[in-house]
Image (cartoon, rainbow, N blue to C red; front, side, top):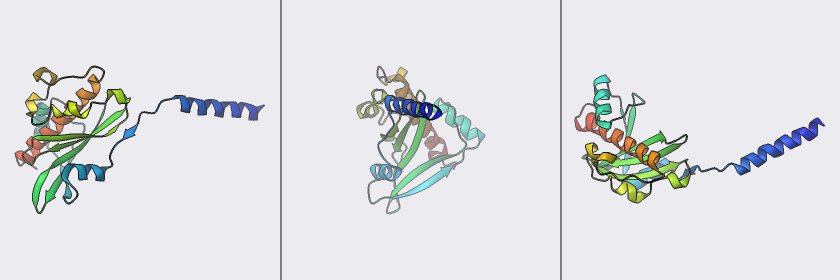
Length: 182
């Protein structure tokens, strides 16, 4: 009888696993992402930044969000010693699961590209590439739904999370790199 109950329980667990939809989707590895950001021939260096309290306050003010960590990493793409740009990999929880974006800035700190590296929510909640395109070349102050950024019905939380990530990356660049306080 115990053996029979064990088989029933295992069968139920297997059925639940099959019936539970899995939405996890990883699109690019870190190496593939760096190649997308800077090309095959670029060298990529990691720049670790540790903002002090004053810098954190300034970043949070610019980004309109709280920093979750006192450390931040940029990937700096270089070709023959010349900086091609800066990339940051940002993971943020959308509803209950993360979205991971690679946010690429020009050497001057302008938003050049956003690539979804992984998205673990249902696919219909994922912002499409054409939505990200409206953000390119916008100033950090204009990264807001109230300032002309169009939302997407059904993907409100995903797009809000993406905007937060972009503002955070741009704020860190502004304070830690552009102002030369790293």
